[in-house]
Image 1 (cartoon, rainbow, N blue to C red):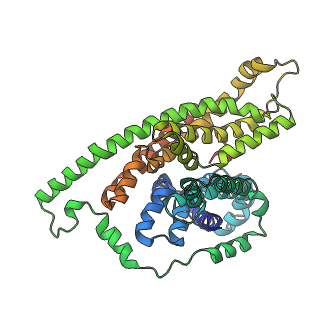
Image 2: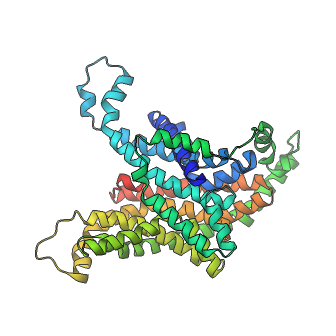
Length: 435
């Protein structure tokens, strides 16, 4: 219930805020702010809010709502920008901007907005489940508890419930059920207690300040030098090793994702299999892509021990299932000759050349997502940036944690810009379903 409540409220708040931000997305300050908040993973936001609000409902809802607001703002802004200009041109001169927006522009993109909102809820359910690994009472908390206590039947039952929840989201999330679900989500949330603003003030005004200047009234040259030494030590001992491991793991996972995607897409393609086989293929891909990378990595790390291999498997299989699903659906619309080849020749010479540009577009788009997830997998023990962030929080060194989170966000923004540049130069286009 908590998984559903956090996801529904967090995504609802994100959609509302993101839509408002999309209207003013043309301002540089708004675009920069949205880029930063969406570059920070939900688990990092949860770790920050845990220090301010504790294990409360507000922590869970905000951890989802804030990054998702930045994502929704960007997507909705792109939809509004690409809206059909014909209705706008048909409106009489002198019509107010508000009327133009609600009666000419918005109706043309509303169906895409609704489609994306449902997709974002599916993502929110996965994110909400993962929040349990930092102590919030969602599915991840009970999964971790069941595994550590050896209750594997409970573990499998929880995963089955989660798969059913994800696969049926479009059945129970409808326009008429939204008010009921929102009210129910508010009712089942645990009581958070009174808000203590002194904790928030202390966190921002004291705890995250660099140690050398934290309790200093006057900043002198020796203090500045000491601060520089503190920052230099943090970069050399934690940031650089974390960056190197994060980039190496990201690139390995990206390559593995590409290979697996090309193996997965025929499973649901009408060019290669019949209806029954495709149904089995759909089921396999739904299970893989519905399982959060964090959950897959957690289980594999328990079985195989701490290394990069479980992280690579988790990242590549999850993302390959998503890309394979999209490419498989894309291949179903290909028109081939009646005398086309069969078997491996059909795959290698008829299908692959036609789907390859779209495949590259999806792969480069997921690059930024893989980087975000790679960084956060450090919380499980893999020495990426997330490992050092989690260690800093555990040692109550919030100043170090915030600097590392900022570095992670900036790197994520850089990867996103680089990916967009490559897609633009290669003229690769992604569809709405990949956002």
